[in-house]
Amino acid sequence: MTSWQEDLYSIVDNAQSEHDIFKKVEAAASALGFTHCAYGLRIPLHFSNPKTIVLNNYAPAWQHRYAAMGYLQIDPTVAHGRRSQTPLTWSDNVFASARTLWDEAQSFGLRFGWAQSSLDAGGGFGMLTLARSSEPFSDAERVAKEVKMRWLVHIAHLALSRIFIAQQTKQIQPHLTAREVEVLKWTADGKTSAEISDLLVVSENTVNFHVKNAVAKLQTANKTAATVRAAMLGLLG
Figure 1 (tube, rainbow, N blue to C red):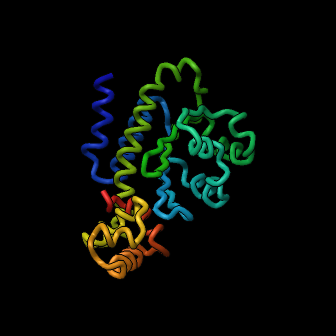
Figure 2 (cartoon, one colour):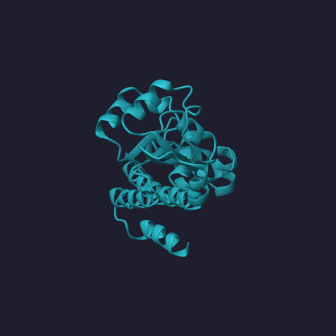
Figure 3 (tube, rainbow, N blue to C red):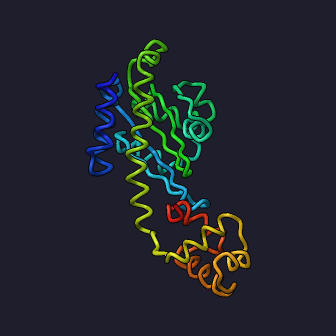
């Protein structure tokens, strides 16, 4: 078990890109008896329009079909993963609400699968799916392998979410002044502009000036949204 854990941690320590990481996840999945794997991450940097990033080794035709049909929106395994981190084994019952998706997935050789999600404090949602075309995933196999599969889920999420979130935040990372950060911190604590002016011994107009600048730099509509985005980008830590 120690060797397995050490091998998984090497995914985090040594990989240089998301593609390097995913190749190691693929190798680990193969060692567990699965020919296919997929990792999806939803980054809520915009709550109204979160960005979803997916890596998988499915057949290109199935990748295209899944995207073209909008199956992500109705996939029961994704819906389950958003609600719970309990592992899910594919079955006819699981896909009862999406029979067309299930029938088409099986036609592309995705017949037996297992999935588990990872939810983090920053609102990130990731899910790892392991699948194959033959040999049903039995209860005995699940008992024998689930500890390693759970480890793979968490290590994959740790490594891939770190890279993807860094890439996304770098694109929109604003430069806030120390005073702008300070004002947003007090705003996050529920203080009004008048209260912040007393705390910082500056005029209320000065506080509002810093708030206005922060709102503009963070590309938000108001100070509440600016405070939330700054917190999600790690600027208030």
